[in-house]
Image (tube, rainbow, N blue to C red; front, side, top):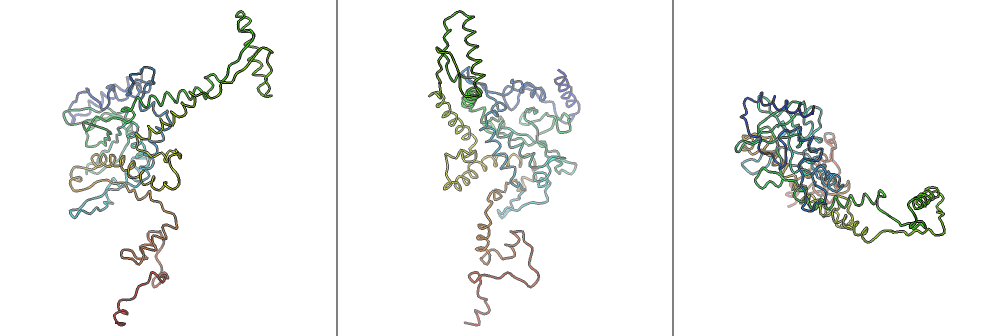
Amino acid sequence: MKLLSRSVFGVRRVQERATSIPAVPRSSSEAPGSVSNPVSASVFEGLGFGHYSRSNVATLPRVSPELAQKHATVTAACSVVAGDLSKLPLHVYERGKDGKDRRVREHPAEYLLNTESSPGVPAKFARFGLTYSFCLRGRGFSYAPRDAGGDLELIEAIRPDRMMVLRSGRSRFYEFEDGAGIMRRVAGRVMVHLRYMAEDGWTSRSPIEVAAESLGIALAGQEAAARQASGDSFKQVAKISAFDADDEAYERARERLKDHMRRDRDSGVLIVGSEDDFKTLGVSAADLQLLESRKFDREQIIALYRVPPSKLQMLEHGVKANGEQQAIDYKSDCLTHWGSFIESGLTLGLLSEGERRRGLFFRHNYDALLAATTKERYDALTKAVGGPFMTWKEARGILGMDDLPEGQSPYPPSNMTREDDSKKGNDE
């Protein structure tokens, strides 16, 4: 009750301070089943009353993005996408009238997205959290205020379960608690709002919410496997001689047999009565089918996120011969899919309308994923140096090597030398 009352008063303070923002109805949020208070929403959601979908089959477990994280495949898929995108450099580019893209190095977003997003928060941490939330919940939020000169001050990721999205016509307003513990209500021009599978452009949906029944089957199979691994399921049958006797004799014989099993476990030899019998159940056909169904569940989940099986160590689907092609498919089918949504959301939330009309936009540097071996790098540079587009000084710069002293040059191989034009003219 203390947390709920603090939250209510916090929202009230926001309403009193937000004099420049019109009052908006609390009728809708970006997900069904949300409550009006952003902080109490997280409390109820933690107790199991938040955004979730239930199958028509009553015995299937309910599914929410938070509960789906119990399945390792869901967590792994979201972590793989978020981890790889957050480690890529994210730069600001400007597309000129000639159609060429030029990097804008002096923009404030360059520092905030690649070094420090907010005081004490590395940019990689903030970008990982934003992308992970976007993959898991289908929505992600970042607060990006500007100073008096219109420059970005910080980029602060906000938990979606602490966010309330309000609507007034076509405008959106956001109520949340920032990193300083201040309750705010801000306009959309200072917010990054990522939304996935939004059929109307605004109402986001998570892959987990859409495929709730498939996730429910996967969670049910995981619970069944956990019971079997923990010993809750029966693995053998014991026949005791006093089964048909009175209750007292039955319980006495049952405890005698269990005591023998406990005492003789270390020796490996179980001593029982002459009329007692054991039958080991072993792995049944149902158990084998459970293992197969869990493999199928993994394939279904990674299909939702477009992650190739090899990225989650499902090596039965690939061999070394096609590993390079799988890496290419991962970049073209998975990373660029999720990355394009993030780039579009950041462009709209971090760049002003004037900057967007001027041709500024964000783009990940996917070339950072192409980490070649030393031999591959040297072979490629050897072929490029002396060719139509690269000199040996440029190649040394790519390798991070210092320039040679004045008057010195590397020894060129015979197959990389060219005839001097003047000498050629004299020979003619």
